[in-house]
Length: 172
Image (cartoon, rainbow, N blue to C red; front, side):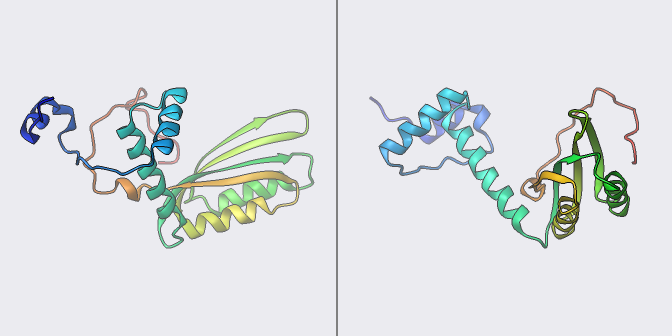
């Protein structure tokens, strides 16, 4: 088979402009298992899967740095019959109003509630807030999931529209 020049490869793949081509050495068994995962979960091609893994690791590293800025969610399940818990949750949210972007509240049954808070701010502040809320008596389970926008910082913004264009966001 004839060898294709780099110039021909670049001309043949206009969608790849702005991407770097790299070569990886991977054990055959690991690659086969990875390919099975890609096929089973319809995760796309190897290149996109590797980019996803890289972004995931970078986000995890940025979110682990308490000195940085983060976004995330705090999810909790709690017993709404617990004395004063609802008031304490509201107070905690008000005390961190600059960090709580939105809250979703769901009644799971006659005693349990699910609450999801969208958060933004210094990672150390978000962790302290989550620890305070998750430590309240009556909170049965919860988890803070952090992400970072720093991974995409400096990336050119793409114009986009939202369906409710022109509708002001609450609290903004």
